[in-house]
Image 1 (cartoon, one colour):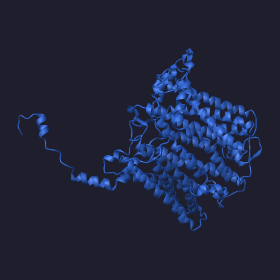
Image 2 (cartoon, one colour):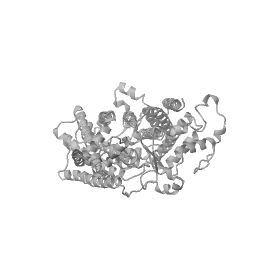
Image 3 (cartoon, rainbow, N blue to C red):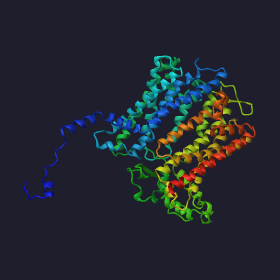
Length: 631
């Protein structure tokens, strides 16, 4: 080399980089052969981040159902001298619990995470630079979910053994049957999730109108034969019923005709295989950039408003009419077509001006002088927050709101038909004897109001941590109290829609009266108010999605322990005192008293409980917003 050569010359004259090494070739071939397992390993590493939630759910959920439904509802059935298959009720529901838990895991891992892999965090696109193929990504997802189902079902069997339910080694087959059921349910959801480009409430509708009916009408809490013949077909097509029948045979020798074994297994396997082939094809086409034929919910509304979306706002997948941008935490945030910049809309709303592409927002309150003692908290314009939430709901998830009362109606139909035929009556709050359906109807309405507030909590978390919407709002003349009041008011509207729809159906069925029963509607709105305020305050401390799972694990025992499905007196006195302090119990008892025209001083105590709960939640949420964004 010439001694006078410069550093740049040396770089230029350096020998070209050699091609792939033999070691690299071997590594590539290894990845190519075992790509599915490599991707499954990646998913396990992701699951490790929320292993605490998985373990708590694996242990806590079965224990809650065994104690409440198995022991509590079992006591009611025993008092009515009723047993199924000649075994204890806790043994009877054990097989259904295993199948339901497995299906729930598959739904959890094969809906939003699958769509997120394509759209939000786009984790499916990273392996594209490796020898891993789209088909291997799909298979790796199935492997990871299956292993998680196997592990959690094994843990459930250990819990059942501790309760004295397991008496035979054949119970190990529950792991096989439950895993097949999970795939038969989860793979169709996976195929569906791989084909949608915009989440507009589809998964909520699937959960509400497919998963819930198949769970409730699959002989879960009673033999399928207790249902009218026109409802039994739901169980016949449900993987939960097929797995439940096989699980009961494995656990305690439930009678199953020999020819039904291949039928039960065949139905689940055929559904799983067909759905897997569809899912694998969609993975390949989408990750290779090919167009996937699927219907986008709200596409008609999108076409009408596409003209108002600037080209800069439509960065995303080809053919996706929704803008996608990436938030500060690396998660893409979808915005519906025609949706205006939040800062512009809220600023215009607060000032009483017209934002581009929006209707004139006439808010005379904005020009009124503020009270000095609330000047830093309240801009007297919560209406602007409500209008923004209403526009977002109208353009995306309106079907979820409108059909919110369907879930408690399904519970009422299932348990009312199935258990009502064997439970002669239950003592009401005034000492009167009520039919079982009439007894659980007010409790289900209270649960519906609470769940409506919980769903809004999920939306609040997204707005707070990912869309950063509240930060944008508080950069206008809006105050923390405006934001809190506006969001909580929308939750109350949701609670009103839920309670009105449920009340009309329950009243038409003769389960509640048309007179004093009308008072159940404002009472349900008050319940929604209290829960929404507290949930919003709690959400301000959440920093990741797994915290929502912890909240769900708090809400679930409220539903099961608050005398919703059976009287409080089935528990010991010490346990009754604890349950009587829970908020949902106050809601259930309040609505049950109104439904039966039992007017006592206890009604005022229940109302005061929720008023204090709402005021405390609103105050904490307001101060938290102030601390997070204004100090």
